[in-house]
Structures are given as C-alpha cells and as structure tokens.
Image 1: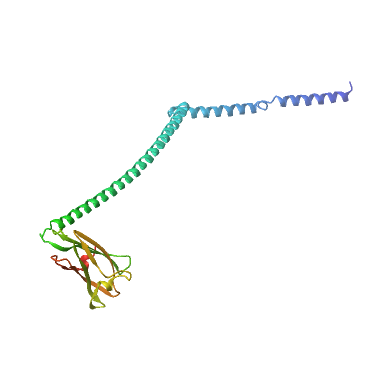
Image 2 (image 1 turned 45 degrees about the vertical axis):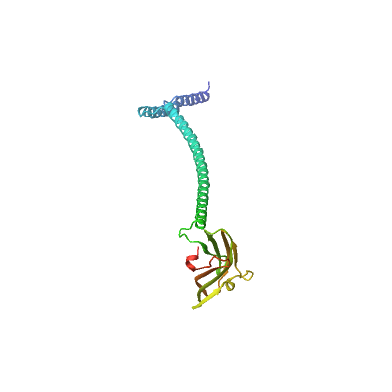
Length: 255
C-alpha cells in the first residue's frame, strides 16, 4: 500500500472514532428523558399533595358531588314550594275580593233595610199623628214642610204635607196661601207665591182630602234676595173646620 493511501485511511479512522465518542457522551442522549421524568414526577407529587390536603381537610370528590346534588334537590323543592305559595296567595286574594264584594252587598242591603225601617217608622208616626196626635188636637194642620236645594243656585224644591186630625167623617177643602219674608239688597221685602214660581207654574194652590195630602212645588228666588221666614196659611172652605197659620224659619225648613 502506498504511503498516500495509508495516510488517507488513518484520517478516516480518526474521524470515525471522534463521531463515536461524541454519540456516547454521558447525559447527551438521555438528558431529555430524565427531564421529562422529573417533570412528570413533580406534577404527580404536587397533585398527590393537593389531594392529601383536601382529604385532610375533610374534602372528598364523591361527597362534594353528592352535596351538590343535594343542593340541587333542595333548590328544586324550594322552587316548587314557592310556586305552591304563589297559588295560595292568588287564592287568598280571590277569596278576599269575594269577601269584600259580599261585604259591600251586605252593607248595601243593611243600609237599604235601615232606610226602609226608618221610612216605616216615619209612616207609623205620621199615621199615628193623624189618628191620635200627642197634643190631642183636632182638625186641619200642617204635618210637615221642608225645603231643599234644586238644580240651579236660586232654585228650591218645597214639600208640604197637610193632615186632618181625629176628624175623618168628611173631606176638607180649601186653598194654601204662601209668602216668603226676607231682605232684597238689604231692604225688608215679602214675596207671595205667584212671584216665586217658575213661569210655567200656576199660582193657585187648592187642596181637598179626607185624611192627608202632600204637595211638591218649585221656588225660584229673585237675585239679591235673602230669605228669612216662610208664612203658610191653610184656608179651609169647609164648615166647622178651622183654617190654620204657621210661620217657619227658612234655615229650619232647609233639609
């Protein structure tokens, strides 16, 4: 072999030995495996320590899941109870509305009944006054007279009731004369019935009855006039039955 070839062969052998020695250097081929193993061991250790800490604190995954499910069941039961309570409240509200309506009906009926009792009492007192008056008087008299406000400011409604007391064997006939005393713009003034009636009303006021008779008349007061006293004269045209006069204060007659 020539010296030149021997030199080339020695160079190749030297390169091969260098490469082989580098591939088998301690730590170069296994370092990444060791790092991975250490990392995994560290993670597992941390997790085990974490689980151990939870167990030491009384925590358990199964118990936590069971407790969570228990809370869900309790929430569901409470929601159901809330819905039932809402239904009960709605039912109570309905019953209360019905009770209030029934109470209103009863109250209205009671007021109506009291009004009827009052009317019957007034009627009994009225007829007792005709048949057997408290003063024992006889003949013609004014049983009732009232004045109430009308639709307009100076319009009034008056009601007169005449009776024949303890003397019913025959009818009584006659006329009513009416006058109203007061002040007209500060001056004393008296108006008769014809001057106080609406335009379409007749001024004559006749009566004819055996037991009693009631009247309704309208009055229109003149502007600037302040009423003070009402004068009523019931003039009888029946023999043996005397006429009667009565004066009533305006404020007393107002109802």
